[in-house]
Length: 246
Length: 246
DNA sequence: CGTACCTTTGACGGCTGTCAAAGGAAGTGG
DNA sequence: CCACTTCCTTTGACAGCCGTCAAAGGTACG
Image (cartoon, rainbow over all chains, first blue to last red; front, side, top):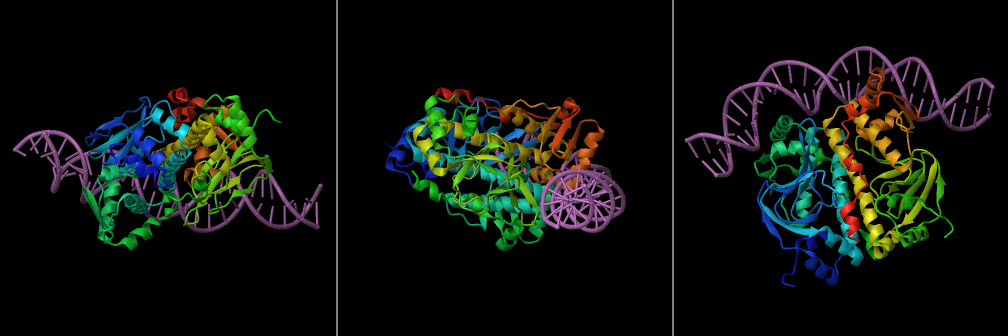
């Protein structure tokens, strides 16, 4: 065992406390991490599903092109997240995955996931938990995109990202790194770039936040959370009852 | 083994071919099915997560109330579906689940899911597959609600439901049972009842479909699919590579 | 220092929401 | 089997959030 940790250990360890045997298994299954440039593709649409990737560093996203030519972002993935959880029981990808920034990924083959399923109930449950959290983020975004104003959606997205970053490493809400352009923010929320821009300017004029190219300043956290009407149940890492059954 | 089949066998059997030992395990884990009235609650918001339910007959939905008082439907669940897959790694439910029509449910405890995870890799993979399909439906709805007109969303929903029904039992697209009110259709798609109504009337005037209280007549399948711009990859039950690894 | 990408602004239109009320259909109880 | 109640559908009027189109101004990067 040449390393004491791995990216996926940090992820799955959020939901259950890992035995040493589980940690050893993960270290064993993890292929060599590789670095990857910003904007580089991780997989393409319709390509066969072969691997999952745990993000050691860098930001990534999955997206697809709508028939009308509009690009739609499905997930925003930050360090610690697993890319491909939604896809690994499908034959082909129906999204494309790309890096936003340069970073480092740890690949896991499908076979190693099957190995986990065969030999470690606790890791399997953690995989379910990680899958459910990703699904919950999508569900939340769906419900919110259907009923909230652009401003409220933007506020909600910023708080969600802040909380997710904070789960991985302490982050200040006053100012944090956010390598997402206004254009991409529009593609995430399903709002036109023009309207994103106007909304951001309005929120800046109301002294709520200031978005610059790769970071965000939150100047009035209270106003922001009020607009976001944020309920963070869906981000909860707790899993009480289930872990006792293992 | 007092019965030859169970509702969950039909569900999980879609994704992999089940060994007899797997079938026996499922029959063993399944508690006695119980019947439940239309509109009756299956669980409430914030109640602790205890069970999953496989639908033997009847339709169900999950929903939650937005802060502005609007009700939002998260999933529509038809016979053969599993209720609670998204929730079972959480401590509490953040949706409420109710029947639409009267029906019969087969409950599974969390403990029995853990039993599956511990003892049957193939069933575990099938559970992942079922979870991923439900997630994909949400993802699809999210993407579509963000970029398509009300008419197109309605068309898409009708085709999705038709295809899902058809996966369980042969269904004619000309006319099929659809116990979803216009109001609920609005709550599913995030569109006001008034606008749902106007859109349905417009589609009826264009001789595409006719929705009556509990069923739908599709009079022009081609026009309907054209408007829906339906890509059914996400409903695929195929899972090639993975099952070979088991 | 040019090229590509991102942000910003203005003008304009329309899809969809809200409010309010009436008409039907279904279910319930006497 | 009929009143009554509740839920669902339908219609009209009106407003506004947000999309589209087009173009200019900034900013990063090779």
